[in-house]
Image (cartoon, rainbow, N blue to C red):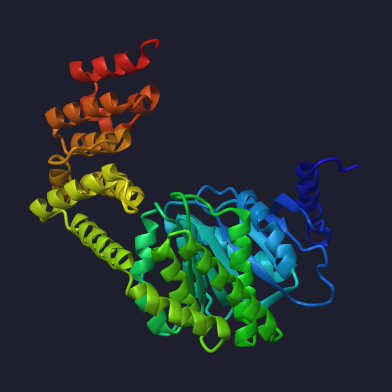
Length: 444
């Protein structure tokens, strides 16, 4: 007798295609029939298959934990009738292993389940969001949309000029990814893509189950509007009215900037309906609001600062932008969370790229990234540590030791990670390095 979900997953793998997965519950691990080295978490709605084809959501987590998105999508998938297949193998990192996991999943889904191949959706968080969009762009005839959480672009190529996908972006208000969505708003509109951005309180994290249910509801309504599912104007207008009410609640609570964003999207996505007409009037009203205008100016200043950080070769503007972000982070303004995120993520990325450049025999490129980092007040231990690694790989021993010491002062505490880090090999045996390592290993 099968007494646990884990045991059930093993039985599904053992008997292959003939196995009947349970309906209405998440199975954390099902092995691909043709390539059992790959697996996924699975959710089948309680009424599957009912002699019809079903839309499917292919999910990609940044850490290979497919069960997390499958669990959070379960209620929405049951309500709106989606199969959920969430990779246990795709994770942040190089594209090659991600592509292998996607190939195995794509074959599995099409051969094993009653899938509507005009309604395939991608969903992911952080690097998983980039993986979802990449897969959708590679299969334009099958993919109808992407739910992109905490990241958008793949970094490989620009969006096509014509895009039939529906893009549902989701970002924390304090997540720097919010800038990426805002940056590509005009591009998505020009491409013809239906797109929506849902912003929630917090930083860089998975959206909760209720918000993911809202994303599936949006995709269901979009499919009905595009003729990919039976038309239901009542359902579409009901969704628009609910979003209009949410915008009105934001405005009433004093969150006028956030309300304006929702009104603008309503006017664009649901054009022609009663809710859209009300949204157009609300946008005109809020555009004249002094607080909204001030917030728009703040957002433009943030965009300029972030642009300056993307050009570290201009050292003076880099330092000015860094200082401005620090003041925003300390002031507790609506920009504070994104300013803090930028002051962590941008220098950390620069340090990591400098390490890669130094390893690849590009010392000049590495130094172009290192130099501006030496002129600013790094306040995150992992950033200082990675900069120390970059300096060590470049052979800049004195600066590497000083920066490593700064990382320890800021709270870096992984003694064994530091002891085994190949990037710090040139520092081993140096008295300063050994003293730092002994300090980390000392009983606390």
